[in-house]
Picture (cartoon, rainbow, N blue to C red):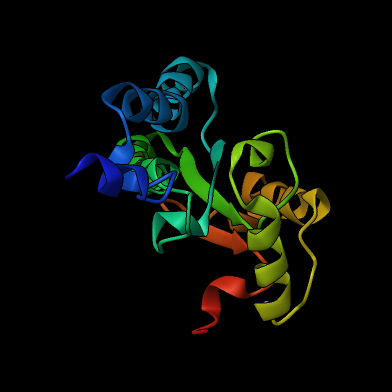
Length: 165
């Protein structure tokens, strides 16, 4: 592209993801689950539960979420593969897909406040994006009440994921 056209491109495009940025996102968001599972499973009892956090950006494009969406898609696939590996040991592996909650990680996402506002407006349950809702889902998944669930992504987003528009 001519120099002028390059300077007019929008910032934070997925296409501009660097190899290093891609690697770091996947090491932190995906490989860390494998590493933790490898260390934990030898000391876990049958009926144990491993949980991770994901986001709807794994399945749908959210502006500026970019490589994190790709990493979350890989994370969700990793959940399924680990569930298959660990099922015969009686260990469950699941993910919680939370709505947009203000966390330290969220502060690093450009336009996060707009994402949160839109989700609150479109969610059937409104603005219920809190750590308490996610914690309740985690308690359920860690308990025997969820003994039949593994390899799943459970949404704790007030129904936002179910909405078409």
